[in-house]
Length: 267
Image 1 (cartoon, rainbow, N blue to C red):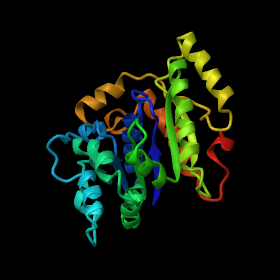
Image 2 (cartoon, one colour; image 1 turned 90 degrees about the vertical axis):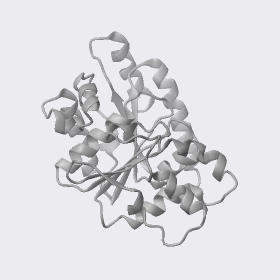
Image 3 (cartoon, one colour; image 1 turned 180 degrees about the horizontal axis):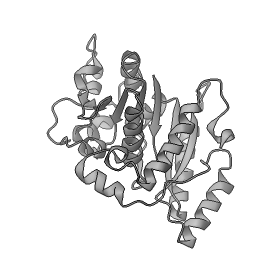
Image 4 (tube, rainbow, N blue to C red; image 1 turned 60 degrees about the horizontal axis):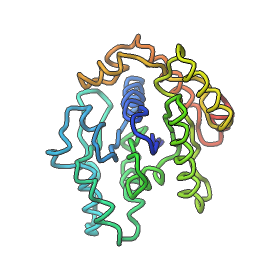
């Protein structure tokens, strides 16, 4: 199983949209896919019509049971199947917002998700993690678990400042890891009609020439429509502009196998 984390320390950049769209594409292309919600806002969970305030089994139970040192933890107990073939969700409850306070004094809590996904490696081809926008035990778990980190970023100058913080976090978290995950910066909600977007995209490539994807995810009103009905965009409208863009991104990510050159070098 390959594990991708979608992360940025700035909200509103298209993290959940990227998780859902890539997940929907993977499942429709025949890959068994698990989406993992580590964001206390529970946007991914809500997308699939589950209520983070009321959900009974979630990633919170996984952390709680691990902290209580329960033996033989089965991650399947916390996973919800969606109505879409090959697509499952490990949902979030709002209670995960309290995890940093609860587990602050415990060791080894940064690898809870990694351990759980290791037990599921024969059940799914891909897992995609929607990580929170703040540094803490949940983001640490998202970063520690992934083989490839995808950073959505808006093509605007304020967002570029937030990207600097994210890259700093990556360097800090993986300072001692022998093989840190590759990371790919994906410009999202790009509107080529605005000079600000065009100039920001140029600046993005100048600042991170080895890591920026060579294309963009365009602004697409179909994204909001798909979200409203709780259907992955690729299944809601295959002809949507954003679907074409995410398909192109996914094709490159699927080529990025162990031993290959990095996606950045291929782009």
